Length: 237
Image 1 (cartoon, helix red, strand yellow):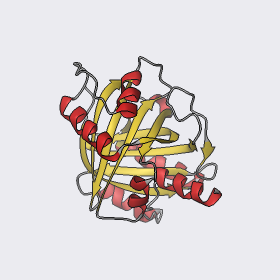
Image 2 (image 1 turned 90 degrees about the vertical axis):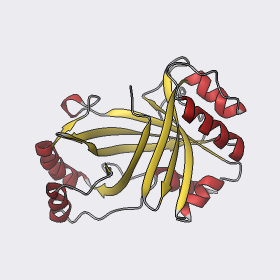
Image 3 (image 1 turned 90 degrees about the horizontal axis):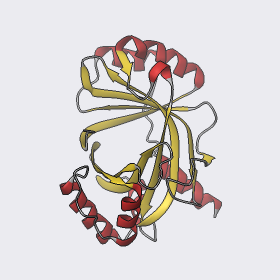
Image 4 (image 1 turned 60 degrees about the vertical axis):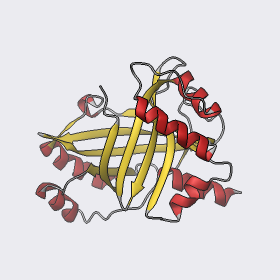
């Protein structure tokens, strides 16, 4: 069963093509690609972010409060109506990320978000998370705001499932046809060739990773995919 509750810190770094290639050489010595990335292939993650009519959730997030939360629907690739997707609440308090999600069929997830009516509980659902989602959707009265997709290469450390490092490229977004089953096209959010590296762990970094970040002078970035898209949208108005 897929993990449905996460508690971890997320550290983000922007890498150009040259630095990415050097970093990957080191990563390959200490980590293994996850099952979706055989032979360093990429897989596509697609998200629909939900927000209030006046964009309260992302505006609050960009103000950098100690606590913030967001709601998104996630799929791997382009799903069909009956395919499983994840509906998840992502919370962040003082840097610690808590993600709670449940599997739903795409049509169930869309109906849930549109109406606020929770689906009948099925074996593939996390009942507790469904109830939390029901409260969240009713409380904020959300609507689909933006579609964001990207292509990912992801790793786990050998013998340590807690440490995960991912590289996202071709990050793209659209505000029309905001559904997961309407294809994965969108406008780019970062320059071509840029990778967003995310280090996710609940523990201290291993020594080899600390040395890697120091060697290539990698500094953390506060980059947010939804936040970047929202700011770009505001500038275009």
